[in-house]
Image (cartoon, rainbow over all chains, first blue to last red; front, side):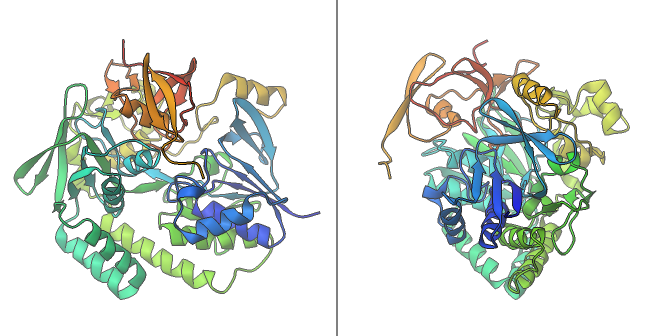
Amino acid sequence: MKTLVHIVGSGPAGLSAARTALDAGARICLIDDNHAPGGQIWRGGPARWTDARARDAWNLLRGHPDCTVMQDAQVIGCGGSRTLLVETGGRGVPVPFERLVLCSGSRELSLPFPGWTLPGVTGAGGLQALIKGGMPVCGRRVVIAGTGPLLLATASTALRAGAHVAAIVEHQPWSRLSAFGFGLLSRHGRKFLQAASLFAELRGIPYVTGARLVEAQGEDVLRGVVVRTGDRDIDYACDFLAAGFGLVPNTDLARALGCEIVDGAIHVDDGQRTSRADIWAAGECTGIGGVDKAVAEGRIAALDALGLPPSGRDLPLRRASHAFAALLARTFAPGASLRAMCGPETIVCRCEDVTRARLLPHRDWREAKLATRVGMGPCQGKTCGAACAFLFGWSHEDARIPIMPATARALSDFAKQGEA
Amino acid sequence: MSPPDLSSRVVVDGVAVDVPRGVTVVAALVAANSLCTRRSVTGQRRFAFCGIGQCQECRVTVDGCANQLACGTICADGMTIATGGDW
C-alpha cells in the first residue's frame, strides 16, 4: 500500500510538494480553496501560467491515478487531531490524514488609514488578484502605495491589463532601497535582474519614495488619494488605490492543529517538520520569502514526510532563499512611523466598524474584543488582528474553529458524522 | 482552448451585463459599474478588498444564496447577482 500524503494549498509550495511526493511513489490528496490551482503567485489557472515549474507539476498531477485534487474546498478546521474539516460544494466532509503538509501561504498586512474602507481601495496583492480574476482596469487610473516589492509586481500587472498607473508610492527612503539593490546585486543576481527588468517595464511611472499615505478621498467611492513626502502633500486622482505593506504567514489552520508558531510563522526544522510529528509545512506560511523558497521547501517537506532525504540541489536553494527573505524583511519592515497614518476616527476593524479611538483605552486584544467586537466579524480578525498587533503591540494568537466562515449545513454534516 | 471572446451574461441588481468567460463576480460588478458589494454595520459602502477570500468584504448574494464571496466565485451564464448596495 502506497503512503498517502495530504497537502493543503496548491500554490508553489503545495504543487511542488505534490509533484515530489508523486515522483517518490506516494499517493497524494491536494486540498485547495480556490477554483483553480496555483495559489496567489501562480493565480489564474494552468492556461495562463508562464512558469515552467507550475506547468510541469500540474501536467504530472492532472489525471494521475495516485492523485486526488479537491478544488473549491475550504478547510474550516480540524476535528480531533487527525481529521481536517473541509467544506466543499456546500457540504461538510471530514478528511482523515496520517501525514499532512501545510502550504497555506500568506495574506496581506493591511494597515489602516483614513478612507481605506472606500470602494476602490484594495490591498496591493488584492488588486493583483482581482485583475487576474478578470476585473477590468483598462483605462482606469491606479495608484499603488505602501511598501515592498509587491508594489512593483502589482504595478506591472495593472499596466499589462491596460490601467494608467498614476504613481507608485513607496514608504522606504531611497537610501534604503538602493542598499537593497546592492544587496540583491551582490548576493542574489537573478533577483536583481528580475527587479531591473521590472523597473524597466515601469519606467515613466512616478516612483515616489520616503512617502506615506495621508488619506483616500471620496464620498461613496474612491476619487483620489493624498500622499505625504517630507512636508509636501501630493494629490492623485484615481479609480483604484492598491495599498500593501507586506505579507503575513497564514497560520490559522496550523494553530488549530496545535503546531507551534514562532514570530508569527509556523515553526519548522531542517526537514520542514512542524512541532507535530505528522505535520510538515512549506512556503509562505513558514515565513515570507517568495516562490523559490516555497518550491524548495515544498520538495524538502514532501521527501521528509516520506522518510526520504532532501535532494542536494534543494538545500542551497533554500539557504539562498532564506537569505533573500531576511534581506526583504530588513528592508521593508513597516516602520513605526506608519502608525501615524491611522487617525482616531479611522476604522481599524472593517467588519465591525471599530475605530482606533474606541480601541485605544484597552489593554489587549482580548479585552478590546469583549468591549468593542474588534476581530469578531466575519473575517474573525484576519485583517484587523495584524493591524492591531502593529498599532498597539497586541498579540492576537488565537485560532477558533471554524477558522473560516462555514455554512450551518456543513457544520451539521460534521456533527452527524461525529467529527465536530 | 476556447476563444477568449466567449462571454457569459449575468444579471447584477437587475441589470444584464456580458463578461468574458471565466472571470469572477467582482469583474462582473466592475463591468456593471457597481462598485459596492455590501453595506457595513454603520451603513458605509464596501467593495472587494483583499481579493483572496480572507477579508469577507465582497460577499454578495448569488442565485439567491447569500454570503458568497465575489472574488472567489466564477461567473456562470445566467447567474443572478444581488449586492447589498441598494438599501
